[in-house]
Length: 356
Image (tube, rainbow, N blue to C red; front, side, top):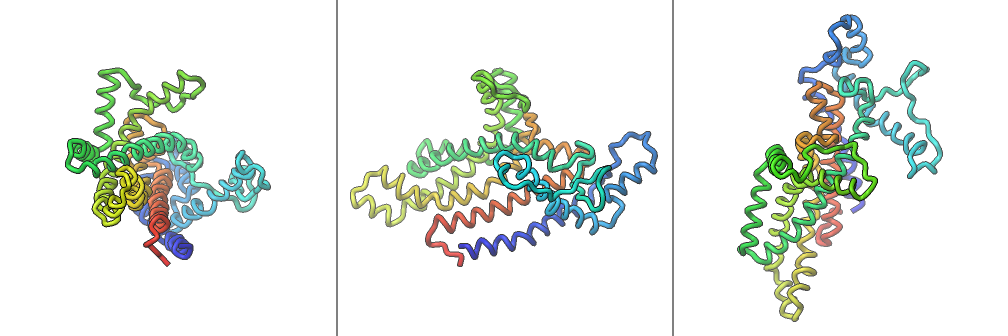
């Protein structure tokens, strides 16, 4: 297993480089200019100096190599300095000074970070992403946990009571979850529960702080609708996988043997069958994690959640190519990472699988 993990980690490096190249070339084909959002009163020679300072006048391969250096070399150094110098968790480590910022007082070689063109002009892209990340993780994480906790019992009972009314109803609801996209379910929930019934706020207040019981209740109320939209998709997918895996195992010989030995039905289903059925389902749960981040892009825009998804859409409309490239690459990194985690989990959970 260790050999397989190391081999997959090594192979992920050229995969990520190829993905980065594709993202870079696709975005370079799109119209965009770092000076497009500047006032028209700025002289052309000043705009030319700005383009030159950002390296926009250099050949494409130089721009790509500079971006790779910024993402894979400069930003990790900034992260290490933050963890050792500022963070509470790793503050006990010796202080480091790997990152050399560029500025008026900088002497010699400095480390230029990826900066935003227009969303937060001149600000480092990763700093903005880190500011928005907690909101996305809070909503996405809660939606995924809720979706999994609902999907697994539905899948188990649907398989055990195959073709029952519950199974048919579950199949109908999961088909709805598969078919209806977030940009439809989001406004639909807003119309029903916010406009008509007035139960929940339709705008997610990212500045809200939980200080007492009332503020905690308000936080739950404003999270319900975006979490419901994302959890519907997760529940639909995982419950079908759970049902299929349970049906495959319920007809196996070891189940009939367990029943013949006199084991109770609850023990047979919830211990023997469920344990073997969870092997493929756990890998599917890991594989679906990057997908829910994709669904969060639209959901955050619909409910005004100030997270990474809304930041990506804002950057696209503002032609902020460094921001778009970095966020898109982060999503690609998540896909590669969770594919690796899924493969490792499958080998760990199923002793019949051997990679070495």
